[in-house]
Length: 191
Image 1: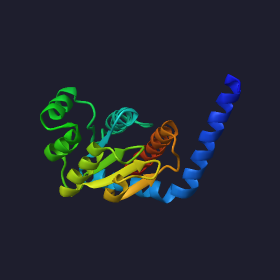
Image 2: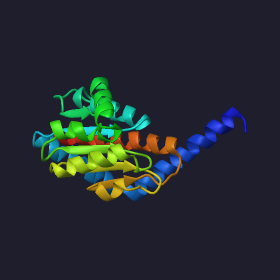
Image 3: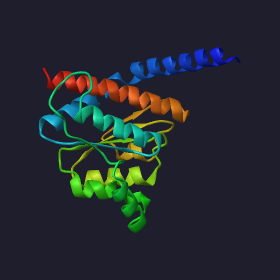
């Protein structure tokens, strides 16, 4: 396969996956957006977390809410639990890596907040512990998953499972979906 054919095939596969997600999960996407809007209108905070590429997405998404997405508007309360290197390394060293997100939620989360977890497998112990810590505090848990959804889907109030086993495609879909949700949130809060 030539590089051009590879590019064409890869993007065609991604487009087909996006179409399938749109057909199968539009209501779930709308429900997540409504959950984010309700939390923000009530003065709550959106928390984002994940590992690896999903950690980068968490940081990216929190930025979209705090700074802006498509329109100039008031800052919205959002925090990426993946960005404080001193906190992450101290917690991992002293309490274990499984606690790096849960510990922050113990300190920061309040009832009515939303925790958005991104995990391609749904099996990472630290995101599972984060979901448990959130639920113990009355925080709504939204999970963006792939593959079989893993154990995390059982802990989520709303779970969206991208129907793929390809980690890169799952992560790309998660970010695209979260961008759509951010657009919906801005529209509803600015209405």
